[in-house]
Structure formats: C-alpha cells, structure tokens
Amino acid sequence: MRSVIYYQLEPSAWPGPGLSILNKIIIFCILAAVTLAILDTEPTIRVFPYFLKLMAISDSIFAIIFTLELILRVWVIGENPHYQGLKGRLRFMMRPTTLIDIAALIPFYLTVGTNGGFMLRLFRFLRILSLARLGRYSKALHLLASAVHKRRFELLISLSFAGLILLVSATCLFLSEGEGQPEAFGSIPRALWWSVATLTTVGYGDVYPMTTIGRILGGITAITGIGIIAMPTGIIAAAFSDAFQKRKDS
Image 1 (cartoon, rainbow, N blue to C red):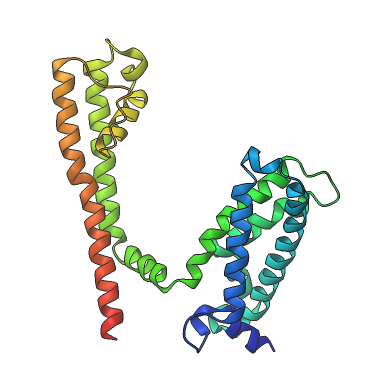
Image 2: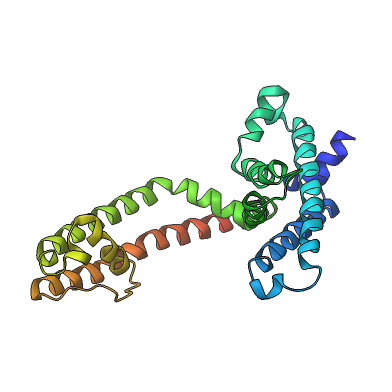
C-alpha cells in the first residue's frame, strides 16, 4: 500500500504520462484554497451571506486534506532510497516545500477551539504560499531550478557586481545631492532607494537629482543599469535553453 501511495503522490515516480489522479486532486485543492484566500481579502465579498461560514468550513476541509497529504508524504517517502529511515524522513521534512506545508498548517491548529482572529487570517494568507508547492508538479520548474543551480556562480558574480554599482551610485548621489535634498539623498541608505529604482530601469520619479553633476551621475547609473539587468537575464536564459536541449537530446 505504501508503494502504491508513493507512486500516486510523487510526480517523479509516476510511471504514466502527466500527473496521477491524486496529484491532480491536490493541485485542484491548492488552487481552490488560494482562490478563497484571495477573495477573503475583498471587503465587498466578505459581506455576502454565508461567505464567512463558507470560509470557516473551507478552513477545516483544506486543513484536513493538506494535513493528511503531509502525513502520507512523510510516510511513503521511505520508498525513495535517499529518504529511508528516520534521518531520511527528517531530511525530507527540512526540504523547502515541506516546510511551506508545515508553515501553512500551524496557524490553523493554533486557533482550534478559539475564535481565530489574526492567526486564522494568517492561516488563510499562508494558503497563497501553497502555490510554491506546485513547483513539485512542474517539470519546467524543475528544469529552471536545475539551470539556475548550475549557473549559480555566474549569477552570484553578476549580482555582486550589481550590488557594487548600487553602492557606488548611492555614494556618489549622497555626495552630490545630499546637501540640497537631505530627505532623499541625505545618507547612503536613503540614496540607495533612488539607485535601486534607477538601476533596475523602473524609474519611479519620486526622487531625482537636481544638480548638474548629480544628473550626469544619474544618467551613467541608468545606462549602466541596462547592462546590469541584462546579465543575469542572459545567464538564466542560456542555462534554461541548455537544460531543455539536454532533455530533448536524451
């Protein structure tokens, strides 16, 4: 029985095409739970008759479903040689997806027997994090994660370079604009907000340099930002392309 449930729950072990029926049901429950959690934040919907009662019932139903799923996953994961034994199960429970499952359930059980309040609203909000669990069902996301992991050093170098440029540009604007605009550029941490908005090419326009030297430095930062943003994007795109090509060739 444990082997049968393992093949039903573990997408990588499922021998058939696509996903098992059980995993399709779980995905439907995740999407339904997230949809209700989103609707619960809209005041005009919360005033509908029976909506709060529907939310209370759905809280219990989804908590039971996701708890049973978590217990079954911990039980059947022993079928995977990498997670056999007590240490293997503990290692499985420390995986990010498993920690998300646990984090999403804890607030509900903390409110059992109470009127809920903030913790119950937190439980509903954490349902949205359940969307991250969908990654275990997507081969494309697995390929993307693998591609990013393989290019982690290149990405780290590009992000470090971007951080250096942010710090340099914020320092330059602090020196050139700090005296004239102390609220926006009166310190390096304050100037970092402008640097982030400019370097990422967002350009909110809420703060901007007014002196000639400040505008020159701002222009250089903006032009530099085009290349800074393009570097990690190109690295990830190339890695993603390589991963799909390897999968296609295999």
